[in-house]
Image (cartoon, rainbow, N blue to C red; front, side):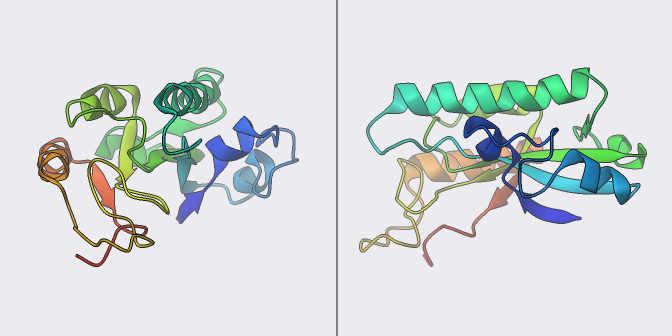
Length: 164
């Protein structure tokens, strides 16, 4: 299992996971026969551009959904999906920049997202980043988001979150 492949990020920057121009490719993963990767969506476009961040998230998410529709990958939504042979993708989102409130996680979950990083290299309305000088940990909204994620079975990635 690979815990972080920037597949969505590469797609948004013209590095195609399918054609071989990205650092990790569909062909390389298929050669492993049966593999699971956390395919990451990286929507951060700037701290103040929610419209662009949401647009980037949707574009990268649609790419994963197209790969599945075309039979190239299996998006892992349930425990049973883990037994499907081939390239399986656990969709992750790096940073909560595109979320306005905790219940936004519901539409991400329904679309197949199963891993959410609270922050990237700057703080969000949900949590302080590891790069923040003001380590306030989770906000009230962040606590609600984590509770909902736990209820849904979404993995919370804290790799870029602050110590607190």
